[in-house]
Length: 442
View 1 (spheres, one colour):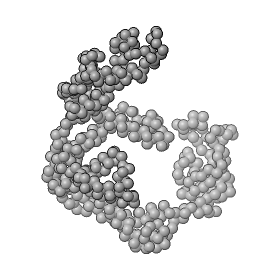
View 2 (cartoon, one colour):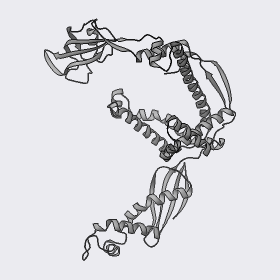
View 3 (cartoon, helix red, strand yellow):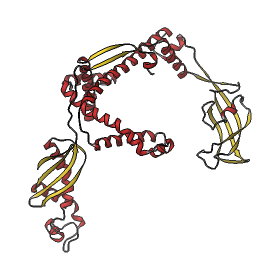
View 4 (cartoon, one colour):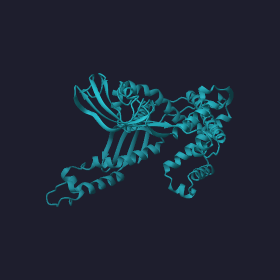
């Protein structure tokens, strides 16, 4: 097989592929053996007629189409490798120049290719490294969150108030008639959560366990259940239990219960250290993002529209998968938010294009900075990951897939690239940032 490339401009190429007769005949024989049972030839049992007899009866090109379908994936892949291009999107505009069992097949096919990148400047870049010192208020906030996470819910005979967890039985009616979905027993509700329509939970405030009360509400005009939308309803409610949140004291016992520390003082110090690392890592990531953005913005490439469309489709697919866990589809999301699908897709285009630019620039930057990982560096990374997982490194590597190994190599290359880029850039340390601007999460 031979292949010849013709550049059509705008990162589109045409390949002329010549498949020799011997290769074509292999596929014809393969197709004949798998499909001969479909042909009925007088004088032969079904599936026993020789290929020459079938071709004589139905025509010499009987198996050509299927044979081409059989060989195309392999010869197309080989041709692409031979001319040294990376296709983007499916092959198009297939045209046959010659199809002959004794001479082979010659055809052309067109497709877009990954664009060439003219790498932007990456030396002497200017950037600012910001700093943030964790405050006592941030530590207090994190300890309060720990309090909430470790709160107990204690049953009380007091009147229910906002924030309490209550258990209720209720039966709703409109005009004295019960309606579908308006009844429940042992329903768990947190007062103030706005789980029910406006006005319902507010009327339960002040009730005590065992008390009964009629609650009157009006369903909104746009309520999903049209049979009750805009109507007044009365709910007969009986309050079963009231549970109130009880927060633990932040003392040495608390520290010992919720952490590896024995005292509040040590817990605060450990919290400060962890929050400081989060802040430092985030601000360092911002610095690295700034440097990479400068390189990407200064790089030149002509991205085929099909690459951007494919990136958008991938993003929509991931979004659809996330929505599934919420019991929604993309169409449901668009309808609920009043979003025009076409406008939503167009709004994704700039971000998708930026993501592709980054994907194209990074390999070029790695080559320019000579930061591809060495075998020794990969071995060290495998050992680190295996140690984190408390497993034998040889067994860990043996079980890794090619994709997983490529992912590890990419991470090592990225880390080396960012370290090198920072070394050759002019980085200015900024004054202390305001806490409200860079306060770490978590």
